[in-house]
Image (cartoon, rainbow, N blue to C red):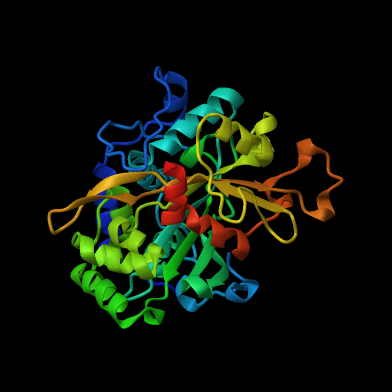
Length: 380
């Protein structure tokens, strides 16, 4: 059973409670008077953003079904209130939107056309699997609220593993948008640092060691948009990027939300079909991740995913240099009805009638949304 750090949790509570609450998704998508902001790959974001509530082989991919160690067991009962939990998610989301204005523009664009609540399929985070900074550092906050660990996914070629978490059974199923709607799944990945080169390990451990007990405050770091370690030097960032773009991304972004995912099948218009949504997004000038094709499809054909290419902003490194670095992106997922429920009338289909979980082949290509190759194509 996971033991929650009481001092860490109380700090999250006291600081996050003092953060100004984000406005709901409806305030962003119904009151905007300007056209969506579409940044260039090297844009330095200085304008305020309104918060919302809302080529690898099969041998290099694997999934361990139902893998749950003792440290990922759910807490017997949620220890925090629903309103507090959602306010923390809203703070994470606010940081995410400030670094990824493309996401805000797309959320506004989709809602202006569809006029239905926009629900999140999942939230995703990246971590370093060393010195307590791995999956568990972020997962413990969600476990405390009643989330449960599901399948573990492996990505040997990228030296990654991931675990996804399902929201509590009493999850709100009303018609709110974003983090005010049905609670999303959570997908947390970690870099298997011990499999990296000795030099990469040296760099990563240097900064995780500098964070002290920062791993205890992963949710807080995400909510306030701060690194739990000191800013790195540009040279060390570049060294890591040559070996692992995932590692370099995590070094400068820390526990910040890597992406949120729109649940397309919960839309009401023809955009609920992800093919139509992808076309709509591209026609409006946004670049989609083309790794393995724009649409990523699971082997069973029931999980369809796509994503934008990450936005970039200028990062001020510790050595006084400033360079553009990849930030976050937005994903789209359509979960089709399981074969055993295919004859159900559409009005009776619920989320549990649809394909659940994740797919390693899809996720492997979605990871590329922050890659140099995709960012270069976006700039072309």
